[in-house]
Amino acid sequence: MNFRTFLPALALATLSTSAIAQCDTIASVCEKHITQAYIPDGQFYRALLSGEEMAEFNLTLFGGTTYRVAACSGLSDRNLVFSVLDRDRNVLFTNKEFSNDPYWDLVVANTIEVTMEAQLDPAKLGSGCAVLLIGFKK
Image (cartoon, rainbow, N blue to C red; front, side, top):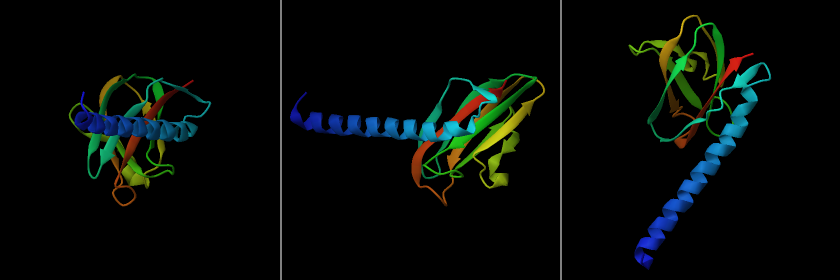
């Protein structure tokens, strides 16, 4: 690797490390919404977003379970819009209708495949790390 290729590679590595650290910090802030009544699923759903970009996460929610979804970006709440959609892309829930509440409890009657979408609220953030955390009720 020569000097000309080293500098861009170094800059990219620095940006990646910074982005990971930013997501880790946001995840730590977001964890406060997964209270003692919930068991975290152990996954961190993360995406770096800019402008109107949207992240999608596919998962299975099991029937007879209450889930808590926590959605965060930045160091304060209500910066992230998240929605839960069924296989046919019907919106089952969106926090946009609730002033971007940072968490919501979803009661699932039957096992269902869903897509969770996350998007920054453009009035609050232009770019950042979107983090979704999911726990299930004990």
